[in-house]
Length: 169
Image 1 (spheres, rainbow, N blue to C red):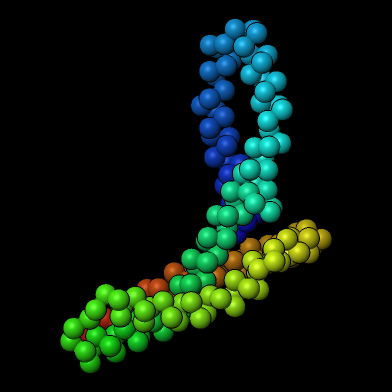
Image 2: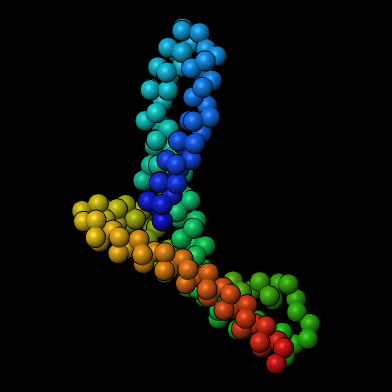
């Protein structure tokens, strides 16, 4: 997910550069152009670290968020099943109870995944291992990641179907 976030960030950066690059090229004086390009050259490493840094960059934060979001969707099937039973046998549904029934399985399942990947910056060790592998290995894991994401989305839809079937039966 982090590699995708980086590639997507580079792509967006190229689009932004395409639209912004004519401004200094055509509207700045020679002195302003020199100062602008010097400042850009000096600040580029800091910008790269801000957006694409492995430890605290924007892309790792977004990948962390996406991992949590997709991983948390899998236990939704169980949550929807329990909620469907609760709705079927208890006519009135409190929003707090609904959130608790939903949050407990998601939290219980997400905590071990978070500990395995993000506690004590373990993902940095994984990055070192990933960088040593060949292209075939990376393609295999890219396919697994895509399957993981589509599986999460499918499990969300399956959970909605389960709750609908339980409530209507």
